[in-house]
Amino acid sequence: MHQSPGLLAYMLLGTMAAFAAFGWMLGREEERLSKLALLDELTGLANNRLFGQRLEECITSSRRSGKPLSLVLVDMDRFKSINDNFGHQVGDMALKAAAGVLRSSIRASDVAARVGGEEFALILPDTGTREAAKVAGRVLDGLRGSSIPLVDGTHVNLSASIGLSGGVLAEGESSFALFAEADKALYKAKEAGRDRLMTA
Image (tube, rainbow, N blue to C red):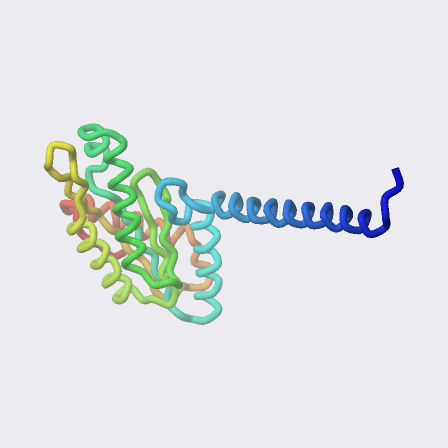
């Protein structure tokens, strides 16, 4: 059967449009998957991989500009007992609530990440330890004001221990050193009775 040039052109355009739409959808899906690879599935915060990338970038930028950089480590108190006593669903709700508090306590230029089971981190560029302590205070207050409702009408109260390190970085000071200082301060906060901030 003979087909007119107009019909062939129409069919060709239709095929090209379908391929273009498929390519666009594929591109969107790739973008979604690459985003997912850098986000924590449960909380939607940056995951460990993205946290590491952003921390290195912020350290390089801090060294270059001479502006301070602060790192805040937030570890939820008695999280294991929440999971053990009330189940993982309540534990997940607690983690999501904590993520919400972190998000609402920082600026758009800051980075909030989940770096472990119940451990979170905040990267605060262009921020000295005094200003970072105010952010940490907002996190502590936000968690104290949060609770997870249980089916029997009671609530699970939340709190966290926080370690903070930062300042203008010395030449050669690594992300590992900054993290280790914040982690040491976090450990001191736990030892001192939890639900508090300690600065390195």
